[in-house]
Amino acid sequence: MNKFFSILLSACPMLLGFSGISAQVKVSYTGPRIDLSQHSLTSRCLGPLHKEDKKSLQGMAIWKNTLISLQDYGYANVYDFDGWHLKYKGSMKLGSYGEANHANVASFGNQYYREEDKLPLLYVTQCKRWGRKGLNKLLFVERINPDSLRSELMQRIWFNDLKSRYEGNTQYVVDREANMLYLFGNSKVGLPEDNRHPIFKFRLPEYRGPQDSLVVLTEDEALDSFYVEDIHQEARQHVGQGAYARNGIIYFPVGVGDEKRPSLLFVLDANRHQMRNVIDLTKVTKSELEDCDVYDGDLIVQSQRAGLWRLHFE
Image 1 (cartoon, one colour):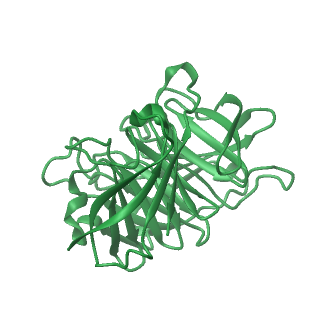
Image 2 (spheres, one colour):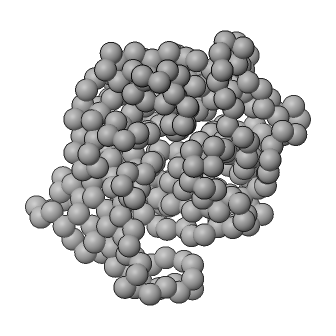
């Protein structure tokens, strides 16, 4: 079921190779037949992002008017952000900084360590198959001070794969509205034909003090679990990147924007085990898509070379 819909693209001129600020492009998409007057997408490039020590861009999260952009090893770049403009404030090393931290996904939770803190705790996915002190599949919980540019590691959440069923990287995203934690990833390394993407749903662990510095999760404790391939086969050969979750709906940007690895947005209803949509973003974004969050109802996507994108769905 293919149908054309219009995408008004206002992007960085240097990326698209023209001197104007906008161009109209039509792309096809799969899914239910929809009314064109109700379904369109505007994409705007908000500009490049700072890179400390030339490390790759990875996780990204937004809280009110603060945007945290992460890099490999756990560099954190802090911006004032009004939805359209970025003001760089500086960089710091996370408390979990090190070669065992890829910092691949970032999500703010709801819990503040102290009432006076400006930001709630930040959840950062390790995403390294080899970990520190023998642990991998870790989620780091950081307390960030955006003014002093300091971060402290408060908690580690570890998925103990007792049955050794998941060889690929394990990633996490927080659903703040539901106070849930979703674990996702690849079951195999190198995307073989039998690769599948598991989804696990847990209650978001609370941090109450040093006794909670390490929390262990297992499959048996999951509130729900399933494989994405049980409901949608197209996901099989895609590497998981970042994610945003809200009330059980998870948004997964994937791909690098070329013919073999197109940039896609998977919209998954984890409560109903349904794939709501798969939207091709190849013509409206550039370079490898990484993490995403929401600002004022729009999806903000961090990409590897092009920087930040704002996607407005109508």
